[in-house]
Length: 350
View 1 (cartoon, rainbow, N blue to C red):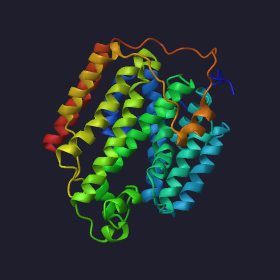
View 2 (view 1 turned 45 degrees about the vertical axis):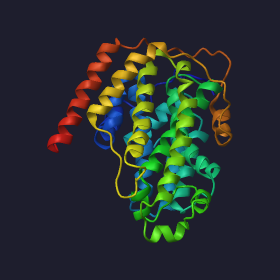
View 3 (view 1 turned 180 degrees about the vertical axis):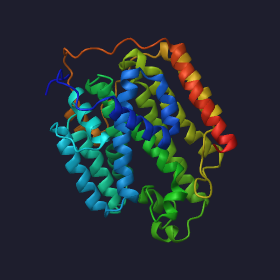
């Protein structure tokens, strides 16, 4: 498949605008941080995230049984990959992105596989099992984002997948209580047993006891190691994309820091990061990005190699480069304005 398609687009401006609106309402922090990305990447990212979010919502709260919802989305994805998208805007945008950036069907299909594991109530006994899941539901997003940035070397894709996995592990650590109240438990069950917790019994009456706190801390320690792997590859990305990715990594890692400040209790409380703190992290990312180097010695996670192999092309290509990023001050002003709206919403509930 060519790395860049000169064919007419499969989606128009209104389709992309619909995806942007969906993300603005459903993922406000991502929407704000996205202002640090070049406009082309930002628009494409809205489309990717809208597709992923709608798939997830269909499994979690859709009218159809989860297995049927996943089968339906897989068929929609197949049609999009063939350039024959269904009528919804998100389908046309996904078809356009898959053609424009040569996103292999195997990558978003792996995301759907991870959602299917959720639907069937799969449990994760070991850390390796959990990372296998995280690669599918989040590493895939990292890989697709790298492709949208027109970067598809094995090293860059491996680090992009790392960032998605680290973020997913942070999500899992943050949502232990919420998941437990919904009958779900993502912490590695082998770890829980080592800590003296019988997973099934704990789910009956979830409590933030010392053993569960220790297990949450253990998962966050693994996440931090993977964040470090991801940060080592930021310098492999186009310069204009680095501030946004650094900011995203910092904002998610801050969730883990907040969990730690809460005594690793994410059962009776849910860690949150204020808009003011997020704005500080964004400013810090903008200050640091010119000094980011490109060091990426580690191979891809074993569980992620199939994704990297599906998407990578390590030799030079004729793929056009991104247009120069706007002046960073303009990017910061856009993020600032959005976060000011977030702060106002937090304060006044609007």
